Length: 247
Image 1: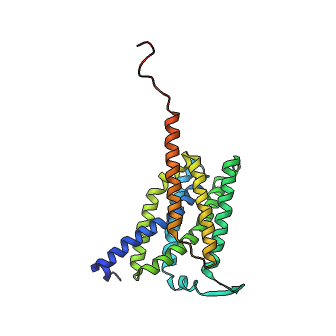
Image 2: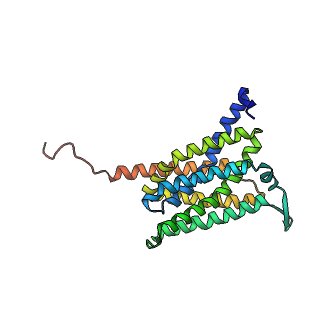
Image 3: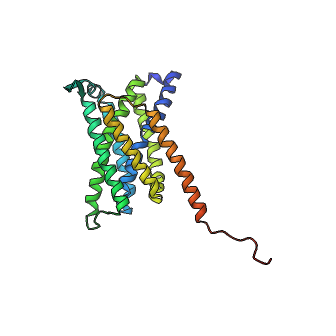
């Protein structure tokens, strides 16, 4: 199972796949960070860790059910000359859910509509974890299929997934805190999720969208917003006169 340890090519594949899994996990981190931000302060860290742990378990579960996962690519039925597979249905359903949830979160952020504080915290936590679990399945499916296409050894795929999730665990809180401090970043992140949702729906209809274009657009938008945040921070600092009038 671990005979690849002596192969330099296998280690290169592991590094490549790990980096790819981390990149593919960015969407997951953003979604989890936004959802747990609606939880009470004392539940956020728990919700964040459970959500990311669910992502790892989902990925590993799909990985070790590899025959079933690959079978999802086989057509199940045809609609208007378009073959639809199990993978397509999951991508389309996940994309629609992501569109709905992102639009709902943007509406709440802009209109100031907050969930009632009378709702028990346990119910809120359960609702958030269910939503995270649903999107984990969608994001994990694409991640596992990508891994299978790049690497032959299941052990390499599993190690790459575990390392990527460990990085996600370390990055999730700083990202979540940063998003909470900057409302414009939250809206930008939700806009990214709408873009991801549309991409999932389109790919569900077998129209391939190069991920490089999407991630470049995201990186460019974030870079511009970072400059805006820095300019606003400088403008907010009161000007200190080093010389008093008449000195």
